[in-house]
Structures are given as C-alpha cells and as structure tokens.
Image 1 (tube, rainbow, N blue to C red):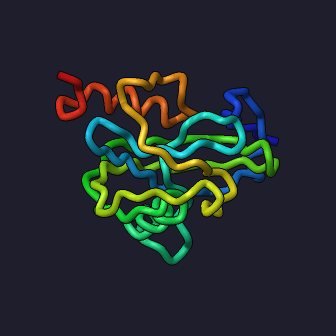
Image 2: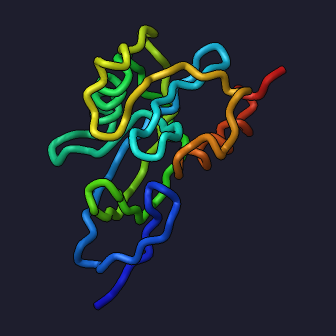
Length: 162
C-alpha cells in the first residue's frame, strides 16, 4: 500500500493511503483595500486564512472564487490575475479526510466592502471575516499555505508600505 505524506491543518505530518485521497481543486481570493487584507479565521486552528474553497464539479474557478468569498465574508469581488498556484497534499483533521489539492490564488478587487456579522457566516471552516492591516501580520499568523502567499504578497511593489 502506497502512503502519501500530508500536512494537517495543525501543521503536523500525517501519512495517508493513496486510495483515500480526495482530488480537490480550490480557488482563494487575495483581496486588498487601503493597506488591509481580507481574511477569515480558520475555525480549527484559529489562524488566519484567505477566503475561498473547493470547486464544485460543474463550476468554473472564477465562479467558485466569487461564491466562496460571498459565503465566507459577504462581499462581492472582481476576479483579477492568478497570483500563485500550489499543489498540496493536506489532511483535514476534524473530518479525518485527506486531499490532493490544486490551489489557485487570485488577486481580486472588492466591489463591496461591508462584511458579514460573525453569526451570519455559515461555513464549515471559515469564520470572523475581517479587514486586517498588512503591517500587523506575519507569516506565522496564517494557516498554511496562506502564510506563503502572504510572504509573496509582501514582496509585490504595489503592496509595500511607504
């Protein structure tokens, strides 16, 4: 039996039989506004994450992106360019499920700005949508792989302070 090394949502390593992996493409939004980044908090783990999630079988990436951001934060976005792609093998501890993920991160513009109240978010993993000052964040504030994307984002000329 072939085992695949997966990263758990808590940052641990979990070895999973290959035949138990679920193939999961996903789209995530990197939304900036006045030096702030749109974030949600991961219910399990308590770290920041970028809004987004899995692509439904009949859905385009762009439609997933808009749907997930609306469900998790309440705002409407305009999808922009692909910022980053990452392949990931991850283990979702709360449901005892493992995924082979294809993760697409898009730079997006907000079309609306008012976030859902915390009790209005109806999502398995995302909660507490917030606009967070980029200057107050470090890579360690994020659940993987969002931290790596945040580090890339800080290096973009349009996102540097000053």
